[in-house]
Image (cartoon, rainbow, N blue to C red; front, side, top):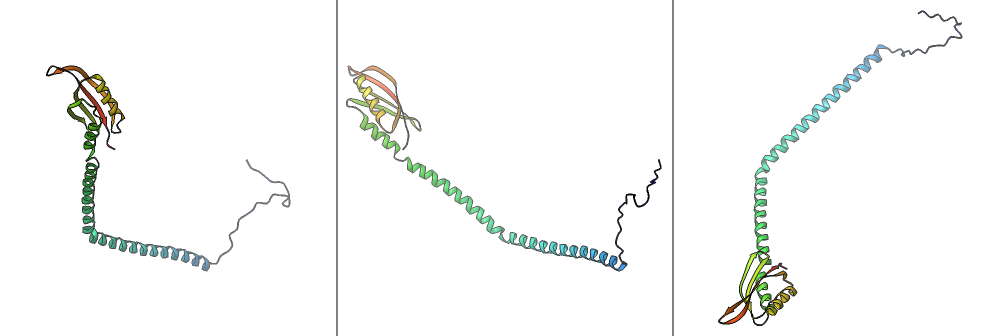
Length: 184
């Protein structure tokens, strides 16, 4: 479809036109030369930086090769130190609980009532102990259990067996106790 604008030229809507300013060829050539000079300058600077970085990398590799024996020695010393620390911790733990069983037997001897004798003392596990013994009455066994419960070392005192028996025509009470003891 063809459009014809019949309005007089004064009333017509004017379209804006974009005009480039006129430039002489010298300015155009100078602009292009400056653009290419900037590209070349940037390229040269980047190549220079790359060479400097490559030189630093080579120096770092040489230093790494030079320090490799010292690093190996440090790793060996660190490994030996860890082994020594492990041995020292084992010795420390052994030393910490060295007198624990002695304390158990000492405490047990003080908590043992009169006319009560132990026939066996055994360690079932690191913190679990069994006591076997004889006495003349159930009351003595109860006194022993009460004394052990009051002790700061023993916990969970249980009567496993209590039965009558005879020794040289004398009636006795044979008993077996279990108790837990925690190192302090």
